[in-house]
Amino acid sequence: METNNFNRIKTATVIVILFIVGTLLNIPYSRELKRLKIEAGNTQVKLSASVTTEIVQTGIYGLILGSILVFVGLWLSRNAKLGAPVVESFFSNSEKIKHPFFTKKLLYSIGLSVGLALVILFIHKLVRAHYPVTSIIERPSKLFYAIVSFSAGITEEIMFRLGLMSLIIAIIQFFKKEFKPSTIVVWIGIIITAICFGLIHLPLSKNFSNLTFVTVSTTMIGNFITGSFFGWVYWRRGLLVAIIVHVVWDLVFHVVGSPYL
Image (cartoon, rainbow, N blue to C red; front, side, top):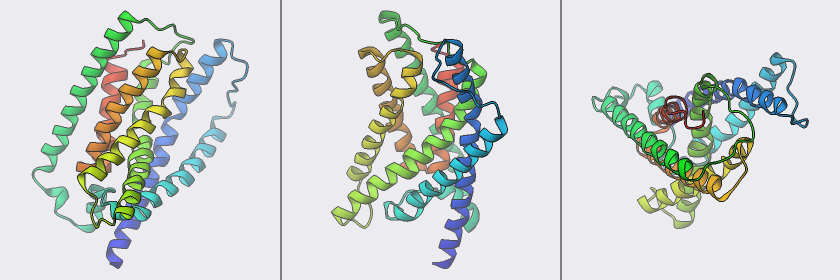
C-alpha cells in the first residue's frame, strides 16, 4: 500500500506540473484575445503590460487549481477506478505501458479523434453556410489556435475528466454502494461532464459572436459529442491518452480545418 501511495504521489506531481504547463500555454492566446477586444473598441478589457507578472500569477493559479484537481481525481475519487494508469505505470515498473497493444490502442483512439473532428467540421460548415453568424471581433490566427490546442487538451482533460467526471462517478458509486462503478454509472458521469463541458464553452463563443439559437445549439451539441468521446477515452484508456486525443482533435478542427478563419 505504501508503494502504491508513493507511486500515486509521483503521478500526482507529474500531473500538477503538466497542468501548470497547460495554463502557461494559454497565455499567448489569452493575450491575443484581449488585444483583439481592445482593438475592436472594448474599453473594459485590460492587457497586462508585464508578461512576467502574468506568467507568475498564472503559474501560481495552475499550481493551486492543479493540486486540488489531482487530489479530487487521484485520492478523493480513487474508488471510481479511473485516474492516470499509464502515467502511474512509469513509476510502478508495470508491464502495462510495454503492452504490445498499447500503441495500437493509442493510434486507434487518435484515428477516432481525427475522424470525429472531420465529421463535426463538415457539419459545422454546413450549418454556417445555411445560418451565417455575424462575428463580433476578429479571431486569433492559426498559430495561437495551435498553441491553445495543447493548453486546452491538457487543462480541460485534467479539469473535466480527472476532476469532475471522476468525482461524479465516485459520488454515485458511493450511494449505490458499488465496489466498482458499473457501465451505467460511468456513462452517467460521462454525460453530465459533457454537458458541463459544453456550458463552459458558451462564454468563449460569446467573445466572437452573439449567443443566438444557432451559436448556442452548435456549441452545446458539438462540445457534448466531443466531451462524451473524451470521457469514453478517459474511461477506457486513461488521462494521458485522453489528453493526446483532445490535443489532436483541437489541432485538426481549429488549425487544419480552421472553421472560423
